[in-house]
Length: 415
Image 1 (cartoon, rainbow, N blue to C red):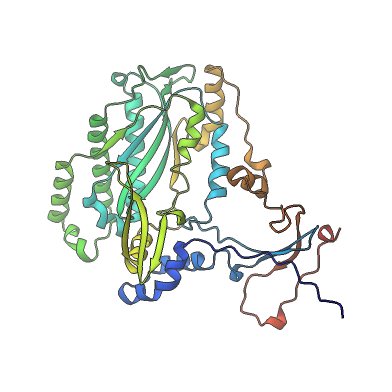
Image 2 (cartoon, rainbow, N blue to C red):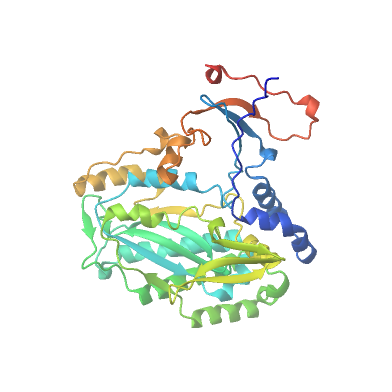
């Protein structure tokens, strides 16, 4: 009797712990202690179903050995740790065409922690004020002849809301080309001696502009003060808050310039399209406790911290941004409206060749090969054949199994 041949099934590989695993096991425990807000439901739903059968996917088959592989769709939520690599690489490649042959400065503007409870209840308003006040500060310093430039700066600002232990830490990372374009657009004025602006002076102006804009929002009734921040709703309470904010030193840090433009993209990649914590930092999930790594900013040591899973979820959800909120913004001569025109003029003034945008021509396979060195089409079983589309797996709709019909084999897969 002929022995039945076994189908070639690609073996499963044990994967590390993910944020989704922690949420899946302990979201009910979290809801017993904290109410899950309406805007958080979508995030939790997407993370739980990312790359699962719920979102659908497709079946692939090797054209050599016949091994089959199921690949599920990504949720593409910007808060999902698994869905940021491709958007980040596409964004960075687009920025590659915009690099100028000058030094770049990395500047960080940080809000005092006294504002944290107010920001949590007014995220859209306060975070927009943060972008606005930082932009006004930098542009005013660029225009001021006393600061050595007397022109228009250009810069990219990226919002982060966390520290290494997932606590609240609202700050903007700004990447600034080292110079300014003259008002008539005919001259590039570089920063001298690899120096941008005085940190203390930046902090004073930033503080004044932020508090002024926040006071305007208060006067217009835009801000809300529920719960523990209720006392700030009264004029005397808000006045005391402003006095306390003015009495504190606001931190602005200008790091050493990046002198070689080819390193700028690598530098930017550390900050763009990041979520509060990556799956790679999660070490263990055991008995309701989560262990993850963090870097001590003073000693630069990589350490571990263990907290309750419910507390981990609470901290993670603190960093959800309002729907439609833009966390990467361009200002000055890099502002979206005239960016292409300004860059073309600057590249001509600086004698550099115009960059070429590559992202539109690259497929997902090419991007993954570039990022990870993994060829998605190479058969993981025989390492010789190519995985070809066999059938689509529809997204779950609540229909019964008899109402879902497997799609036919595409012509290109059968060939």
